[in-house]
Amino acid sequence: MTTIDVNSSNPPFSLINQNDEERFGRFMFRPIQWIRQMDGYETLRKIFAVGVAILLSFTIIGLVVVIPGIVEWNWQANRGSSSTPVVDINDANFTSNPFARFDNLAVKGQVNGLYITTNEKNLEATDQLLTTHPLRKNTIHIGCASWHNLDIMCKRKSNFGLIVDFNPKNAEFIKKTIEIVEASESRQVFVSNMIDYLNSLEGKKRDIFFHKDQNGLPTDRIEKELLREGSWLQNQESYDFIKKLVSNDKITAITEDIKNHKKFSEIRKYLDAHHIVVDTVYLSNICNFMKTKDDQESFAKSITHIMDSDTLFINCPRIKHTDCSPTTILHQHTILGGEILEKSFNQSLLFELVRD
View (cartoon, one colour):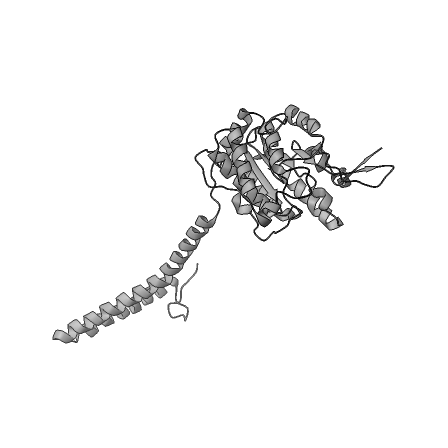
């Protein structure tokens, strides 16, 4: 049997609690004794002083506890308001352009001038692939240069169009095209209004479109678009399709360098987050300007970021004949994204094709 020595220097737990309670009672009773010793106004003054002291104590404790909580709540609220909201960008009533955020005002590239219409070859073969390739839902077309993107979007019935070029003047012209489309009910009226606009330009603004590197006047080429097979201006149905996309703010023109693969990775993540499929990519002959190995690697990275296995990639690489040196021919070459994404794919084919 265990015995307890009450005289021990280490009393049992129950005794410790009893002593503590007695000391606590004496401690709490002292202020009351102190107040009772006072009379009259002095008593009230003492009571008021004690009340103020208690109030200040609780206020200080409250501030210490509450302020950090308020700061944390406010930070969380601000962080939430600055993040990108998840919205249905397919809604026709959604007018804020979600792709404008990717515009890069620091890029100022330019090569000769703008080509409003396409002067590339092998359009029939590309058109055949665009026609026979299975259509998908909720798609976007991504391309460079100007109106040929609208041709592709009409053929593929794209839900969105993102036109990217390293020349800021290209984005300006696409926005002007959108403005004139909105003001023109028919394709004939659009062509007339666009020609009037181009003829009204002077000096350097005119030189952007009327330059020696193209055959004929751009105004003449625009008129021919009304009859050209595959043009978005060939019939009213195609024009109305583009006009509807324009009215719903579904076509965006931004400025960016194709070598900025990190930006194209961000674009792809944004598209994936909103379940938008990259259906077609058109890069004309940009590949011919990738002179160094680093440039070519960055170009290839950007492509792989924005494509999936069913994406149609339209490109104009140099054509090298076995009996002569490489020549730059604007001859479209369309390839399925799945081939480019294969580890065994020879990336040099993005820049040069060898033919007998």
